[in-house]
Image 1 (cartoon, rainbow, N blue to C red):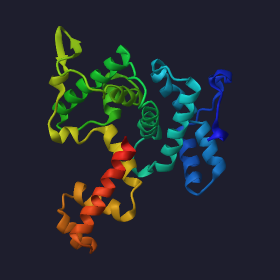
Image 2: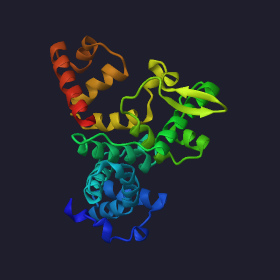
Image 3: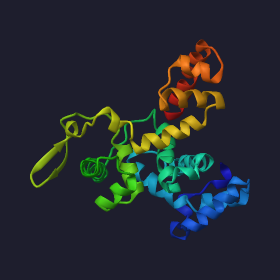
Length: 258
């Protein structure tokens, strides 16, 4: 980690490199082939993303350099786990990964104050999501939400993650034309909750860390809806072994997701 250390106070952040989408694709192709120089260049080209995220934690009371270091760890994990077949921008994938690292680092500290502007962004995104679903009868992507409320997709992910702390169901969250929206008004059914963008991205990263057999069991049980007996028949082990491996995999995923 030391080779990527940056003393923020001594760095002119305006001079940090900024990669184009084409440059990212070219570098990532080289990274997948084991090119260490390309990986270092890709990391340096995404340090602005780390800096933009740690600014959201400015009220945590933690040293900014420490937060930057932790953010860089999240960035490197994002590079290691990013799947180009997910059809999402790298930054969209990396933001929740970086936030997750910082949240784990701050886990034992005091609760982080969430600014009103971040809360407003989150609730506007929730409100827009519900509106789009009513219009199209399908779950919108982060990019579609971002376009509707004219906010960068990365900011929406950060805002939604920031409000995950418990709040009152009767807390007013959004108001327009005199109509007040409360948290309880935004509670959707089970089907809609299962399609949360942030959860989907983080969940995939957790599953990717499992062994091949554990990965297959989770896929069959929770994505294809098969019973333990059906899984046992398909992968040719006993139901007891399926149960044991499933519990182990879920514990591993829970630990990773924090």
